[in-house]
Amino acid sequence: MAVGFSAATRAASPVRWRRNAQFLTPDQTSLLREAFTKSLAVNDDRGYQYFAGVHGLPMPIGCSVAHGTPYFLPWHRAYLYSFERSLMDLVPTATLPWWDWTVHTIPDIYTAENAPDNPLAGAPVDPRALQQAKAGHPPVDLPAQTVRFPGQPGSPPLPTAQEVADLLEITDFLDFTSQLENLHNNVHVWTGGAGGDMYYIHLAAFDPIFWAHHAMVDRIWRIWQQQHSGANPPADILDDALPPFGLTVRQTLNVTTLGYDYAVTTASLEVDSAAADPAAAHATHSH
Image 1 (cartoon, one colour):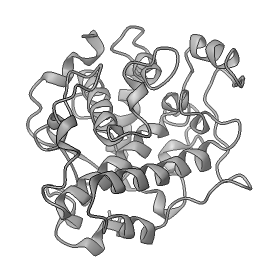
Image 2 (cartoon, helix red, strand yellow):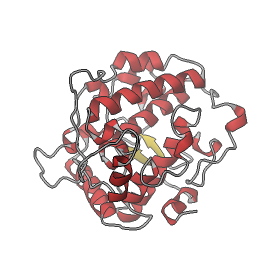
Image 3 (cartoon, helix red, strand yellow):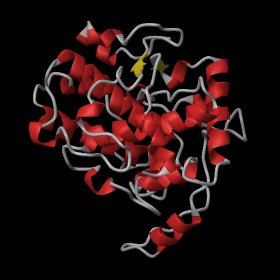
Image 4 (cartoon, rainbow, N blue to C red):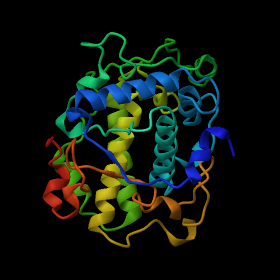
């Protein structure tokens, strides 16, 4: 197993809280930026470039099952878990926030408007990934630093709170996964726009907002699990490995076993209130 993913098998206790990116405190934002900055400076398989490259280019590892399959949610949960643990190796109290895209705006902490050197606004792309993308069919020619062109004409709109609420009413895991992945795809297209890294799945993880987007996806799965107890992936895949993360599908099913959960507020010590109140599943603006 690669060094970068050895953390996936470690005990993760006590529970750490993933919070709404829109309402992080200045201290929480500072810790997150510090963690990303330090990760970007690591040039081996414990660093940002390595983790981003696993999602497509230059080195997809297990990514062939990550999209359009029943493994979509478990694989990405293991992916975020492993990346978050790598950040915590650098900044122990840093956690990944989630981007509530139902408010239809990119959180300020992911822009450069007030912080020109903000590591969350963009990141370098592995030159090998750029070369491979340019040589692909069709070729994709992007700059050395990630870019976004959100909300371009013709892009699908960001999902609404009602769409998320409707999604949470689905009782079958495969149907739920398929429809959540479709919403997830729309966010990729809206955020990147034609010519933006998030538009292209094999380059998307180099954009720092990718991790907040997928934390939102994971959060929705977590809420769905709480509302539909026992509604798991198909039994015949539960013990399948999720390379390269050192976890099986079954080992991703309980987030608290993995040592994290989704907080109600930036100071919360409780699980997301949507667990008890379905209407709260899309009331994500509290801070």
